Length: 516
Image (tube, rainbow, N blue to C red; front, side, top):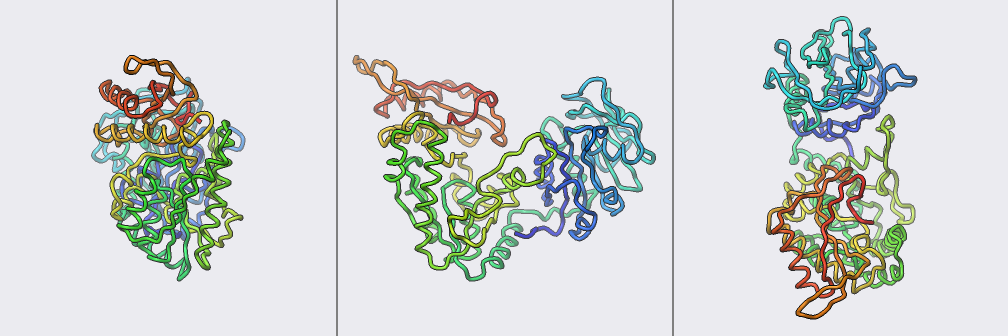
C-alpha cells in the first residue's frame, strides 16, 4: 500500500527500544510518521516531500567502531531535524561537539529547566519532569548550537541551531515518564515542521479504499477471518472498498472461544452482508491433537492443518489471486531490516512473503501502516461493534495453548465455559477494557474438594489477568477481591469438573503472558 499521507515525518532508527513509541506519539499529533533505516538517502527524503526528520535513540556509543549514523547531507535539505538521546549525541559529535562517557549511566527521572523561550517547549512548564536513559552525554556543544534546557547533572539536556533548524534532547519525550513529552513532540510535528494534522482514521480509510481498488481491480480477494481485531478490521475495510469481491473464510478449529462462530456469522454475514464461508473443522483438529502435550507440537499441528483446510475452502472461489492479511506496522518493523541496530528482532509468520502452498499471487495488507490503537480507531470509524474492536488479544492456536497437557473435546468444553465466565464478569465489572488480557488456563492436575458434603476430585484452573502496552512486558493486575471471589465462585458452581481456581501473580519477565 502506498503512503496515504501528504505530510510525513520520518524517524531514522538507531536501534532504540523506544523507536516505535516515537512514531506513535507523532501519529497521536495526527501526523503520519514512518520508521526508516538510518542511512536513508537525501534523494529519497527529498522525493518523498518529508516535513521533518527525527533521529532516534540507540544503545551504541558514537565512539565505538561501526557506530550507526546517517548521511550528513540530510542536514542540508532545509527540513527541521530533532535528535533524541543518541540522535543528539551523533549530530553533536558530527558537527564538532564533544561527547563523553557519563560518570555513571543516568537512568530515571530528572527535572528539566528551560532557558529562554523556544518553540519546542511551547505550552510546557519552565520546570518539568523528564526521563533520562543514557551512558554518553554532550559535554561541549557543537559550534552554532545553543542550550535551551538543562537538568541538574546534564547541562546540554536540550539544544538547537537556529540557522540549521536542528533540535536535540538528551531525554526521551516519547515515554510516559516524561510529563510533557507528548506536547514536545506535538510542537515539533505541528508547530516547527508545520504539519496540519490531517492524519485521521477517516482520511486513512478514504486513501486505503483507493489503494485497495487500484491493487485488486476486479479480482477476488480471500481473507482468513479469525475474529481478532486485526482480521476483523481488515475485513471491514476491504468490504468497504470492494464489496462482494471479498470472500472471508472462518475456520472453526475446535479451540475457539464459546460462541465465536455464531458471533462472527451474526456480525459479518447478517449485519454487514459479507461473503463468509464458515468451515467446521473442529473434529479434524481435535483428532490431530489427541495425545499431544508439547505446546510447540500443538502449534505446528494447528498451523499445518489450518493451511490444508483454508486452501481447500479457498479453491471454492474461482480465480482468487489475492490473499488478504491483517498485518500491522509493528509486524512490519520487527520483521524487516529496520531496527538492525536494536538488540533483538523477532519475526512474524504473516510478513515477508506469501505462503507458497496457498497458491496466491499477491498479498493485500490494508493495515500494514497502522499501530494497534490506529487499527481500533479505523474499526470504530467503519462501524464495527465496540466489543469486537476492543476485544483482548487471543492466541492463534486458540484455547489449545491454554489447556496444559492433552487437548480433548471434554477439556475444551470445560475451558470454554470457564473462559466465558471470566469474560462476562470482567466486562460487567468494567475491568475487561482496562487490562491487556484476562483469561482462564486449564491445568493438568486434579485437586480434592468438598461440594455438598461430598468429596470431589476435579480439575484446577488458573486465572491470568495482566496489564501491558504492547505485550512485550506485562504486570499482573491486582483485581478487587470481590471480583476475584465472584469469578471463582461462578466457575466452581457453574462449570462441572472444576473445583479449584488459583490466581497467577507472575509478571513478564520472568514469566510469559500465555502459559504455553
